Length: 300
Image 1 (cartoon, rainbow, N blue to C red):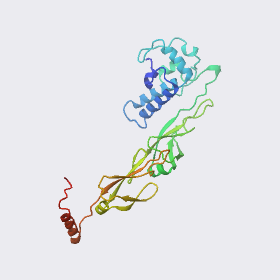
Image 2 (cartoon, one colour):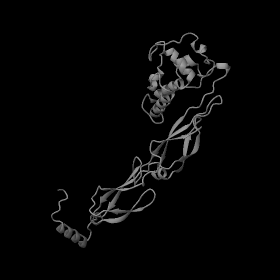
Image 3 (cartoon, rainbow, N blue to C red):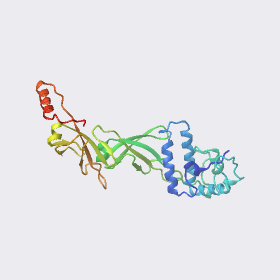
């Protein structure tokens, strides 16, 4: 069998801190999770990442693995563990397994990977579960609660109520403590890590904490100025349009974006919409306007 370089699999250096390993694992597990990545080989990559994390996040396993790796073994090289190596380091080889681990892992740490010190299995915290939740923009602004249905390991379904903090942004993660995989030996369960996505909105677009809205206005409102209602996530407000405005001009409503320690603003982009001339009187009005502005060239 081949020696596995767990540091290389996670893309971290041998002196990586516990936090570095945790961050690398989360990033890669998210990228290669079979529920998200359907590419050929993604599932095998995901298993390898989980195995590497199983060793490097555990102080005893990592210490033993580092001792072995210091002998000059490198990833991909043919490998046979020294006789009695696993038992001499206190790992249990009598279990029935349960983890989806490679022959390399089992040759070092046993089929279950559990510690045999003092003759009892070592308590092990349950693994974290990564999932996604989609919310609408209004919920992101107001905060609130949403229901999330998750498949459990036995094929059943559990429904969780998730609290959404006001002002949450796309890509932020909500942690639900204890809602991940079950722990063993009395250790706590893992956590559920929910990455938030925000559905497209017909009226608004997000730019960080700022909210963008396109406001149609009439030509005379642009030319003469006006005060018109404009929607915001907190309700409609009156907006003063300066005389002489053009399409594309952006007006700022301070503090009307997503809430937070530094609230965002709402940027209102003006879009001049000319009405259709359906009657003779309306056509004459346009002709009069054309004659009045005969020197104006909109393309000049």
